[in-house]
Length: 63
Image (cartoon, rainbow, N blue to C red; front, side, top):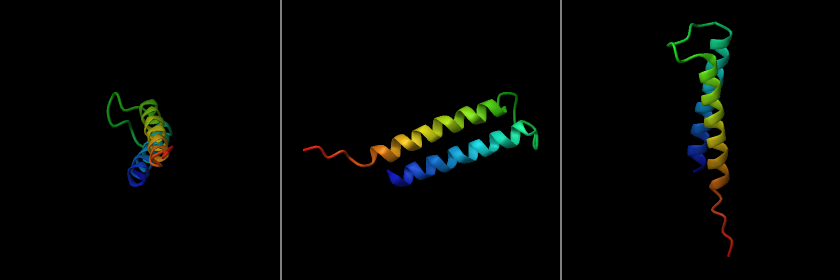
């Protein structure tokens, strides 16, 4: 799960960069719904998922 966490985290980071680029109006929004707020919320969700995947990979072997 470590690789999946890294992939999800990288995609979350790219979404954050896309939100910054959209908020700074370097490029226009790709659609009516794809505003800077959408990108930041998606980034937060993906980064939290990456944290959950990274923590969950340990297996928690409590015997």
